[in-house]
Image (cartoon, rainbow, N blue to C red; front, side):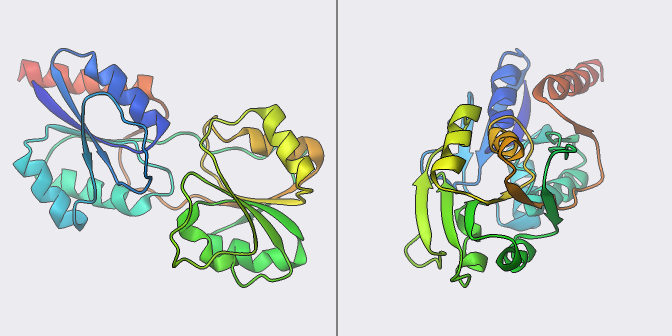
Length: 252
């Protein structure tokens, strides 16, 4: 048996865990950061919590006798990706990033692309009065000082009591979201601007399509850099890569 560590927390990671668990020679362990209260539990063994930085992850890979690492974390979870790439290199074990494609701007989109959530907050006063904010509960604070803007904040879990949040309404919900529902949401709340990270994937893409149809502006936060290394865009290609690694293990 070869031990596969999946750095998870995404739908891609859950799909990968299900498919990898069907390979007889593979034992699957999925690690979740523990940031959501009721995460979707993938197939196989699950561990929850951080590793303690690059050094802690390196120790874990050695102590748990991990043979292969596939990083299927959120595209904006840059720190764990860099730690994972470095730890895998130190332990001399194969490492792959499963990175879903980013959303691409269409000719009818009204995007303002920015480099960070903080920059997104800084450009809103000249653009918006009613904002659909979809950047996650841990990054609400940069918008809290914007007193002349009303926010509809969609989150998986409610924010902690000690976190500064902007004025508006919190909507707790988990994707995937249907286009009809997203269109209705924008109309009912008179949204003129969406703030979104370019997460890619289908689960939350409907809001981008609805914004295009309704002429709603989108402040799109660009993705952070990723480590240099092998990448695939979906679970099927990750499985193909994994099988190739297992075949080599069995030969040698």
